[in-house]
Image 1 (tube, rainbow, N blue to C red):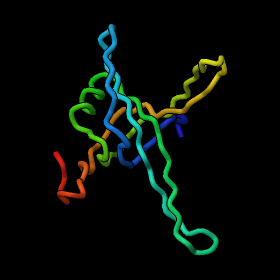
Image 2 (image 1 turned 45 degrees about the horizontal axis):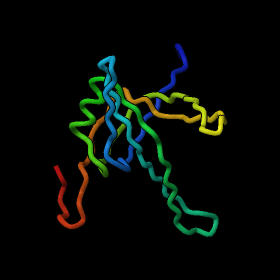
Image 3 (image 1 turned 60 degrees about the vertical axis):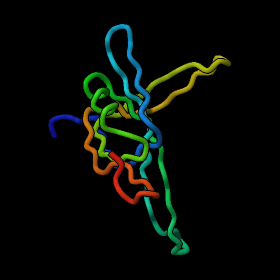
Length: 121
């Protein structure tokens, strides 16, 4: 192995419409949450669902593609890396968050509405 890499691939659904920010520098940021689901049997052989929520950031041209392509409920494959961020609360407490910084995505399915039973887009 040449080197160890920080790489993550997730398949999930968007929990909300991507939030897009444009900065004075000209850079664009798209931020959204992605839900991933794991299903397993517990020790009593009862099926359990475990949903994890991930914050995803995408910059530049990728943010533009996300803004045009993704909606709440869209199923996507996200490729990127984990980034540790720190911030301070209003009370002065230091907090940490791990986010996924996307490098690419693939739209698997557009959102399917229950009323229509068909893909929306």
